[in-house]
Length: 401
Ligand SMILES: *[C@@H]1O[C@H](CO)[C@@H](O)[C@H](O)[C@H]1NC(C)=O
Ligand SMILES: *[C@@H]1O[C@H](CO)[C@@H](O)[C@H](O)[C@H]1NC(C)=O
Ligand SMILES: *[C@@H]1O[C@H](CO)[C@@H](O)[C@H](O)[C@H]1NC(C)=O
Image 1 (cartoon, rainbow, N blue to C red):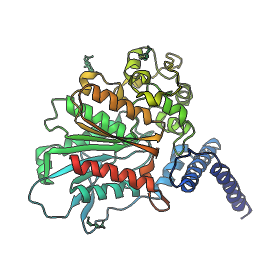
Image 2: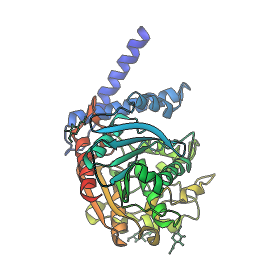
Image 3: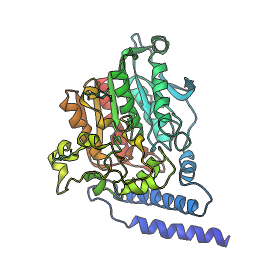
Image 4: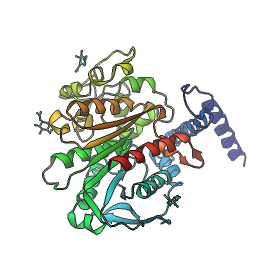
C-alpha cells in the first residue's frame, strides 16, 4: 500500500514536471498535447528505470503499454474485417461490403513504431484502415511484419516484401476483386520507411510484373545516414518523439549494442566507405531555403564506431539515399510532413529528390503538425491533429488512386 502510494505520488510529480516543459507556440489543443507528451515521457522514463534495475527491457515495457490498445478484427456495417496470413505473415484485411460492378483499388498499409512496436491491431491503425476501405471503396491490407529486436533488419523489410509479392499475384488480386493498375503502398513513420523501400524494389525489379500506382508516406523516416539535420536539431526534445527515444528504439533494428545509439546521438555512427551517401542526403542541397534557417551544414563523422556497422549503408534503410536511376521509376507519390518532427527534413528532401527526377509528388505540410499525430485518433488520447492528418491522407487516396 505504502509502496503503491509512493509510486503513484512520484508518477504525479513526474507528470507535472513534464506538463510544464515548453511546447511550440502554434500547436492546436496545447493542453492535450502537453498531457500526451507528459504521458509519453513518463512512460519512457519508467521503462528506462525498469531496464536499469533489470526488471524489464525498455522496449518490452513500451510494448506492453501499446498492446493495451489492440483490437480484434470486428466487421461493421460497411466493411468486412478479418485476420489471415499472406506467405505466413499476419495481415488484417478490410473488404468493403458495398456492391460494385468494377474492380476496386487496394492499399497496403504498414504501421509505424520504430520497427520495434505496434501492429495493425492498434486502435488508431485499425480505424485508419477501416475508414480508408470505406471512404475510398478500397481493399485494405494491414501488415504485421515481425519486429526488432527479436527480428532485426532485414526481417521486417523482407516480411513486407513477402506480403506484397503474395498480394500482387494475378490470382490473388482477382480473388479480392482488385484492379492491378490501382494499388498503393502506404505507411507512417517507420512504416513509411518500409513502404518507400519496398516501393523502390517493386518498381525497379522486373520480377514484379504488377507495379504500384502510388505510394503514400506519412511523416516517414527515410534515412539513417545523417541525423543532424535542421529538423533533428529543432525538435530534439519532441514533442512526442525526442531524438533520444527515436534513436534508442530505431537502433534496436540493428543491434542491442548500446554503443550504436550513443554514437548516433553525436552523428558519428556511419562507417568508413559511406561518404558517397552524404551528397544524396545533403540537406544543404535538397532542403527548401525556408527550412535551412541559420543552421550550418556539417558532415556526419565517419569511422568513429567500433565495431562498424556496414549494414547502415543499405539503401533499404535509407530510401532517400538511393541514386537517381532508382528513384526515376517510382510511382505517383504522396508525402505528409509535420513541422514539429525530427523526421520532417527526410520527407521534405524526398519531395525534392523525387521531383528532380520527374516523379509526380503531392506534398502536404502540417504547419502545427507533430510526429505520430495519427496515433491520437481515439480516446483517451484524442487530438484533432490526428483526424486532420487522416482526412488529408484519405482525401488524397480518393482523388488519386
Ligand atoms: C458506414 O458508412 C457510412 C457512409 O460512409 C458512414 O456514415 C457510417 O458512419 C459508416 N459506419 C461505420 C460503422 O463506420
Ligand atoms: C553539401 O552541400 C553543400 C552546399 O550545397 C556543399 O557545400 C557541401 O560540399 C555538400 N557536402 C556533401 C558531403 O555533399
Ligand atoms: C544505382 O543503384 C543501383 C542499386 O544500388 C545500382 O545497381 C546502380 O548501378 C546505380 N546506378 C548508378 C547510375 O549509380
